[in-house]
Amino acid sequence: MASITSAGVGSGLDVESIISQLVALERRPIDKLDSKRSIINAQISAYGSLKSKISAFESAMAALSQTASFKKFSGTSSDEDIFTAKVDSSAARGSFAVDVQALAERDKISAGPYPSIDTQIGTGTLTISVGGESFDIDVDSSNNTVSGLRDAINSASDNTGVTASLVNSDAGYRLILSSDQTGTENALTVTVSGDGDGNDTDTSGLSSLTYDVSGGVTNATAITTAKDAVITIDGFTVTNSSNTFADALQGVTFTAKSLGTASLEVQRDDDAIVESVKSFVEAFNALRTEIKTQRAGQLEADSTLLSIERGIVDVLNSGSAITGSAFSYLIQAGVSIDKDGVMQVDEDDVLSALNSDFNSFVSLFAADGEGFAARFESLADSWLENDGLIDAREDGLESQVKRIDDDKIRLEARIDIVEARLRSQYSALDTLVSQLSSTGSFLSQQLASLNS
Image 1 (tube, rainbow, N blue to C red):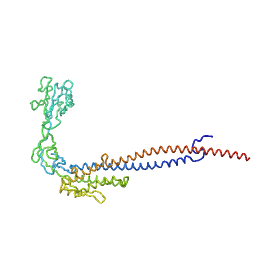
Image 2: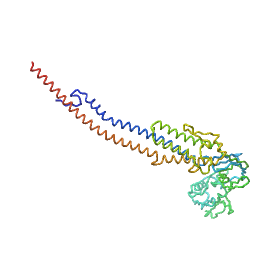
Image 3: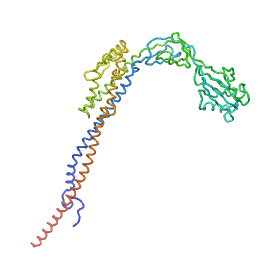
Image 4: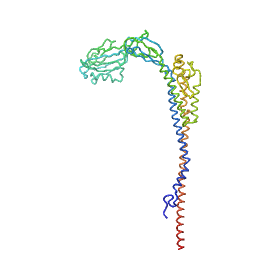
C-alpha cells in the first residue's frame, strides 16, 4: 500500500483544517498575552510622553526659580554713538550722566621700510614684552627676513599677546607689531641682545626694531600709544584698560564708542517680566493638559496621575510664608486658576503687584526652596528621579512585559508539542481509515464475486 504523505489524503478527511482549528484554540492564551502586551506597551509609551512633559515643566521651573528671570532691566543710552550699555538682574533703576573722556588705545609700532619681504633684518635675540610678561625670538639665518620674523613672532608658543603683520606701503614693506589688548597695562616693549652687528641699540640690524620707552631707545616708530579709557559717571572718574567697563556701575556694562556726554536710563523691563510669568503659566498648563490627555487615554484610572495632581494641588494651596515676600498665593501676583484647572494671567494685576512690592513679587516665584517655581521644580525632580514615581511605574510595566514574553515562549513550546501530537494522532487515524476503506472495498469485491 502506498504511504500517505499528506494528512487526509488516505481518508479524505480535512485533517489540516481540523488540526489548524485545534491549534488555534490552543493559541488563545497567547493571543490574550499579545493583547495584554500591546496595552502595557501603550502605557509605557504614555508614561514616556508624560515624562517628556514633566521634564519640560521641570526645565521651565528651573529657569524661573532664578531671581534673574524676574529681575529684568533695560538700559538706554541717549546717544549710542558715544556709549552703549547692557544691564543684568543686579542693576537698579536710575538715571546717570556719562562723560566719555578718553578711549582706550593699544601700543602699535612699525619698523622699516624694507625693499621686500625677503630682506634680511639681522640676527640675535628679540625680547618682546607686554604688560610685564615677555617672550624671546631667536633670530638666525632661518628666520631673519622680514616675513620670517613676522611668522616667528606669530607662531611663538609663549607669545604673550603680540601680533605681527606686514604693510606694503609706497616706501616699502613695514613690519607692524601690535599689542592684542588695549590699555597702559598692556604697553609694548621690544629689546635686542646679541645683535649680529655688535650693537644692541643702534638703528641698524636687528636693533632697528627696539622700542623701549622707559629705556629711552625707540628705534621703531610708534603708530599708536597704549592708553586707558576714562569715563565719568555722575562726575566720578572711572579708568579702565579697555573701552568696556563691566563694574563701574552695578549691573551695567558700558562700552565707550567716542568722546562725548550722554545719559543712561535704567528701567525695569516689565514686559519681559510679564513674559516670564506667562512662561510659568504655559509650562503649568502644558503639564495639566498632558495629565488630562493621559487620563482619557492609556493611563485611565492610573494612580500615578492622581499622585502628580495631588502634589501640584498641595503646592498651590500651601499658602505658607515665603522668605522675603509679603505674598503667599499666586493670585496676589495676578495668576489664577479657573474651574477647569487652567492657569491664567491677568497682566494688569501682574503689573500692579510689580509696582506695589517688586521684591515680594520676585520672591513669590523664585525664593530659594520656597517660591512657587522653586517648589514645582523640586516636585518635578522627585517625579523624574531614579526609582521615583514614574521610574518605578515604568519598571513595573517593563517587568510585566518580560513575564509575558517568558510566558509566550513556554506556551509556544507547548503548542508545538500539542500540534506534533495532533498530527501524529490524525496521521494514524488517516492511515487506519484508509486501511479500513481498502479492506471494505476488497470484501465487497469478494462478496460480489461469490454471488456471481
